[in-house]
Length: 283
Image (cartoon, rainbow, N blue to C red; front, side, top):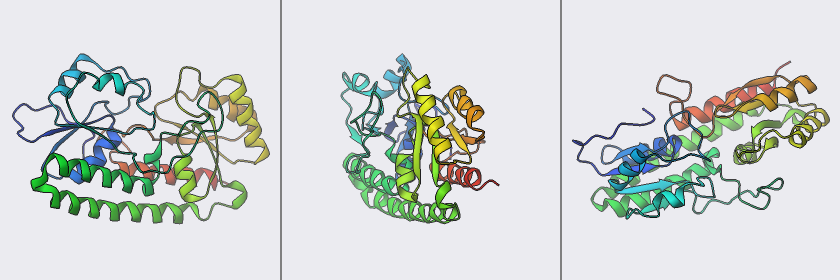
């Protein structure tokens, strides 16, 4: 399934916009054939500091519904919708947030709740509610699509737990650039460390690098990781100092193109888990 579609003036279906590609893919699985779902942010782009274009605003003005993640993820979103008379739904509503405990974001909710396939089922339920309100005539189809997709999410979660089960207890530590894996780590029983909690202007500071180096050394972490939409420069310094290799690129905020490694959200979860498991079980 493609990660985004171009606006089509001859498509009579109501237009639903999501803030980024992961949400668009989830929403398409619920929408089926009844709605046209597009992502504002295209594949490969970074979410947090995104600057909407005039074209984004024009497209949004013609939308019937806009879906955002919430939890402070899209810092630009409030201003984006301020002058739009378009209903929107927050997909993380009802998720139990994990609180960030360090840095400038200390005390705030970690916004990356979709990285848990358990939480994603809540996202699906919120999408069903929003779609049924928008298009009551097809509400039964949305509910049926949602149940089928939630069954896939449960299956993926079982696969994740099974693939990570062989990782020895002393190696069950996930070290990344951004703290985007807290919810996945909670789901599958991994300790977590990261350079920065949320992508911001100040990433990979000397203090962050030193703290991460100490964690890797103290826990004898066999491999570390970085995300696809950020620079791995600071993580490379951690790798060079500790000897723990960067064992792969992880996907969080964006799907790949249709021909890439993570064209769908389910693919993203499977790819990341396999990459993590391979890195943590390396000889």
